[in-house]
Length: 323
Image 1 (spheres, rainbow, N blue to C red):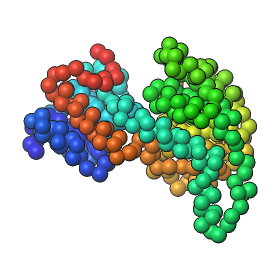
Image 2 (cartoon, one colour; image 1 turned 60 degrees about the vertical axis):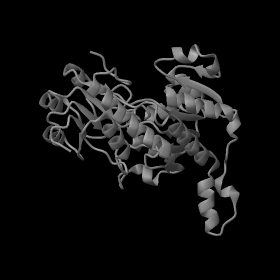
Image 3 (cartoon, helix red, strand yellow; image 1 turned 90 degrees about the vertical axis):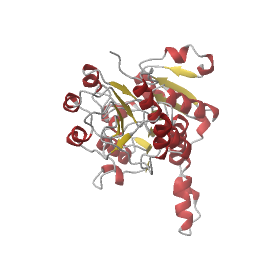
Image 4 (cartoon, one colour; image 1 turned 45 degrees about the vertical axis):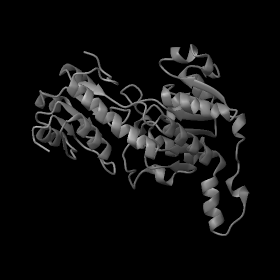
């Protein structure tokens, strides 16, 4: 790979980059691969880059100013929290994501966490392995079909999760800044759209499916939990920063909330000192909701294909900013 390659994979913690190699080779394009972690890493390694495939490395105003040849960033995933989109726009850099690679996987993980928190099969199995046989240790257990499920964020994943819980007989109430697409789709008539406060007050279980931004950071906090039903359950497969984790631990330990299923945390890996580690009735998985064998291939391919489109001057598939 030559230093003159215009495509750079800035960082990637996947098992391999075979999908990307295959796509770039077929397109006759070379690339460079690094494991950048800081602004300085990006500036040092991405000189001359036109298109970057990015996972976690921070693209900031400082980085954009130092990389005048850059035209496009495509992120491995949906969220672009580590990219200053406004700065990218000022510098004429298109910011792209891959919103559709793991829709079903994330919805399935939310459902799996919901089942574990309510029905507790994993917890019960651990107890059975110890030689015990007593279901009363895991009561109370709710009848799922009697529950009202609240969904915050009615995008692709939120709707996919809504369909899953609706099939189980749950009533579904949802909140989003944009609800026109829900109201105009007859197949989604089972979703009752409501204000955020109404969703918090009505739901037996709240599942988060929204992006993270300055307006909603820490939105699930002591004040929010106070509005929820006593014993309500919280599921988060979206972004860790949506939750004030100390407040969540307090709400679980006090019994205000009946349980939580969490796949994402504010700092990952979850710190040893996190109050969530000792909180009552919580299940935490290591940011795995996005993953399946199929989803991983889709993500890698779609990132590489977006970079190829950029290099060919073609219309980008998923550009988030306009200029």
